[in-house]
Image 1 (tube, rainbow, N blue to C red):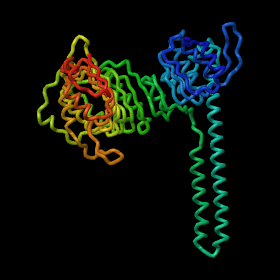
Image 2: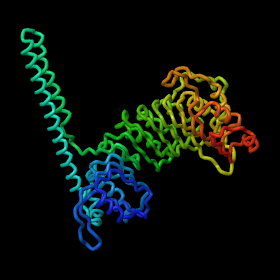
Image 3: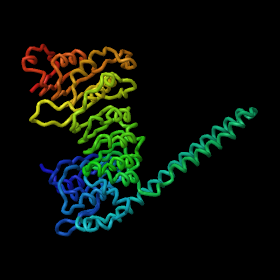
Image 4: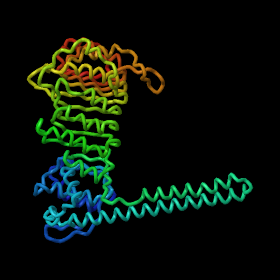
Length: 479
């Protein structure tokens, strides 16, 4: 059954304990159709109001790629209403989310009056005041609870001290202990009181957001200082004219520089312009996704790796360089000292776009070989590997990596040494120069390997595939 406004109303009325809702790609839903999730009384088409309902206790709401509203700014107004009314919300994916944060920060609620009147819900000014009052009451309640806990702790300490005093009254050391105890406890009390003072502004509990525009990061940071996962879209990048967007992104991420764990960005600019943002936020990242980025023969991919040393997942979907790179000197190729490593990396995806009419990609980024060798040898925990349409030779790199039988400094929990590619389970090598001999080497190296896709690999023939005695445990795909 298709999901529409009636379904959402039914959910709001009947599923009163719902914590997670995903309506992404429900194209019959307009942004306004989500308003019943935030509670309140709603007017029907006949003008009668439904009974007032409190908001659902939603922690997670995913609503990307839904239908359009009657007006262009409906998505912004709806997102603002849900942000203010869903007090338990920690995860939100919705169009207009960033602009809604700007609207709330500036308290520019008048521009949404037409929307709220049309939909028959409370005005955002009123909803904002209710949220502020609720937050203030919650802060005061927590302050009282903590103060009571501290007082109870002090009472217990005083009882213990009296018992010690009665038992060891002749020992002066106990006098000293008794004198120091209340002083330390008093210091803790003052620190606790400082910590529970209510925030001066409205603070939202969001930790995971998707659908954010770069120019809204400042407002998002002020309203949501606890963000640890964010997806940013930059779709208005125009080369040199808008290179400041890279700096704007870096400044916007500064709020969460030591706490951001998952970062995803659609960035149609050059990789070098994205580097400052990754240097700001990369130290704490465990997952990085970069889509649509453009590369050149001198793109600082090694610096990206160096900026994100804790990554467990790296996904890059890029445009290959448009100009070919001259062959590197042999000395430059051997210069692998002080290269960064990603010892925790479990999933690596490096996919380049390609023309379907051409079988072989242009070898336009020869220095990428050093980066790939760095990643494959410095990431012994790799389980998923996807290298598609690379603008450099791959077979020679895999051949060299498979010759390495021991990674000094890396060992599993049992103390056994780790080897490169020794744990891979899933491998995609489409449109690369890999050979069947190298594929066999991968099978021999990893006993966990289950799947290999070598489609459109021009150095592998149907005859080789047929003659190869492959393990039944490994599925090999070739087109």
